[in-house]
Structure formats: C-alpha cells, structure tokens
Image (cartoon, rainbow, N blue to C red):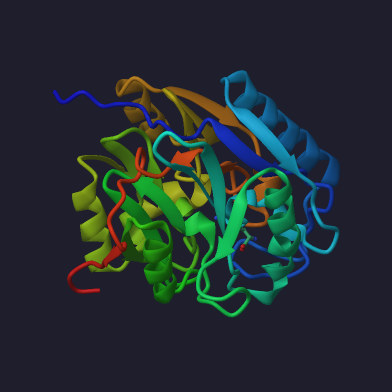
Length: 306
Ligand code: ARG
C-alpha cells in the first residue's frame, strides 16, 4: 500500500466571532428568514469549535464581525490565504480577497481586507478591485499538483485564470451544478496527500469524473450524506478530522479505518445559514511552492467536456 502523508497546511486559521449572526436574506437553499439562529447557542458552538481547534495544536486568529454583515461568520469566504516563501528571504502571508457573487456579502471584505493588512499580510483582488470576476474562497482548495477551484454558482470561470496568473500556479476548474452544494467546500475535502472526501453529485458529469481521477483514494459521498450532515465541510488537522456532529457511521468508519481520529463538533446553528465547520474556518498557512507547486505564468486546466 502507498504511504500517504498528512496535509502540511491546516494548522493556522482565521475565524470571525459571531456577534451579529442572523439570517437577513436567502442566497442559498438552506437559508430561511423564519428559522433564525439562537444567538447564544451559536456563540457557544463557535467557542466550542475554537477550543477544539486550539486543543489539536492549531492556532486561531479572530476577526470581529461587522454588524451589517450577518454571513461574515463564514470566514472561509473572506479570501484565499497563502504564504509566499522567497528563497532565503522572509516568509510572507498574502490573501487573495474574495469578490462575492451576492451584493449582500460584499461589505465583508471591506473590513476583512484592512484586518488582513494590519495582521502583516499583503492583499489583492483578482482582476480589478470590486469589478473583477467573482471569486469566493470556499471554492478553492490545494490538491496535489494544483489548486482545485469550483465555479458556477459563486466563483466565475474567469476568476480561475486570474488566480492562476496572480499566484503562478496550476488551477484545475470543476463546475458545480447542484444548487445546495454551491461552494466546493460542501462537496470536496482533502484529507491527506492521497485521500479526499468527494460528493460527485455536486458537479457536472465531466467535472465529477475529472475530480475522481485526481484523487487516488476518494471517500465518495452520496448527495444525502453531503447534504444532510455537511460532512464534506470538515477540516483536517494532521490525523484528526474535525466534522460537524452527526457524521454518517459509514463515513466515520472509512476515516477511522484509514487511521484518522474523528472529532465531532456541533455547529448546527450555523447550518441555518448554509455552512458548517469548514465554512467557519479559513486556513491561512497554505504555502506556495510547498503545498501547491509553482508553474511559470500559471495555468488553468478544465475537464475535457466541461
Ligand atoms: N450564507 C452563506 C452564503 O450563502 C454560507 C456560506 C457557506 N460557506 C462556505 N464556505 N461554503 O454565502
């Protein structure tokens, strides 16, 4: 059997403290203005998630939530955090800010960008600030030789070109077509350098096939598993998978069989907004040239029949 190596990234997170979490509008099928989150329960669940992450040896930096941005708690969508390593020089954090599809979320990056700058990172937008192609960072993951980027419901295909060129990496695009799996992180979760959870039902046929070909050992999720438990929306810290509570027994036993420890965290209040563990956490330690190979000029690869 081929040895697999744990992910090198996923040990430093940015999260947004849910002081103003509400459902003010419905931009995905989970959101219902009549089903408001319980503010205190949500805060307790969020604090529980932070302490689970810190208990596993990872770090959390906290961004304050804007009062006018109820979805800002889904920190994964603020931007794509990377670390640039230049030869012998200093290691510098950079964030490619999201340009949200829906106007309801666009103000989030207006305060997240200065926050990232104050934290010592540089920031940029794909294309031109405010008018470039839509990019939502919950659509982008490092996987083996490239960034895998979901496009369709939120991120636009054009953003993939900018991202590849700006970072000098290969970007593999996959088209999301399922209305309830509107971000890649609801349907794809890298586990180590050979294994990942994949819900093929989220994608068009060519993209599903291309993604399954990229993953040597996929844990294939049914639509029901991905949709009812948000289990693909997990994070991985070394050999531990931090999952939303209620993970299907079948999924858990595959993970345990592969040697992972599964830790379940109840973040059910946040499911009302259409996001779970991964959406609430944004890894900022993805290192270019280590976790994603550099490719001169960048390159976009799309499935053959997309
Ligand atoms: N209400 C948010 C939206 O529709 C949920 C975002 C979920 N986040 C994620 N990374 N999938 O944009």
